[in-house]
Length: 159
Image (tube, rainbow, N blue to C red; front, side, top):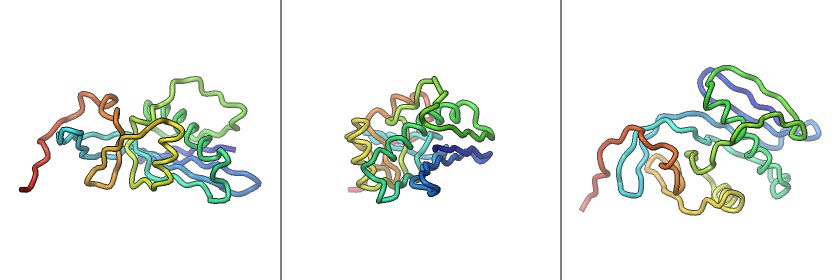
């Protein structure tokens, strides 16, 4: 069973459970960030961010993380558009969302583990990271989804 809870503070949490126990979570929300592109240009934006992602070790490599992440991508499309209070609950077999998903490369990831980076590489082909000074990671293609967002000064370098 997958459950998503939306809150007024623009964060949502999805849980995947089985046999009465939670086996994984993903927490997503909009966060104001200053993000540097490959050219050192700083952009001020409020992208959708993955703030936490965890699947219990006993359930890793069984498809639970993929189901949870796919669910988040579908529900995030609604979240991105409405940003209000909702509670959605459905079984993956009865998925009623027919909307286009959010692209994984459009997300900023907060402090991803090596396992999470490998997960994104394996399932979504995300290979080239652009690490940020704020401990977030964005992937090649991130700025394609955030064109026109506020651009500030280039990154100053020390000699």
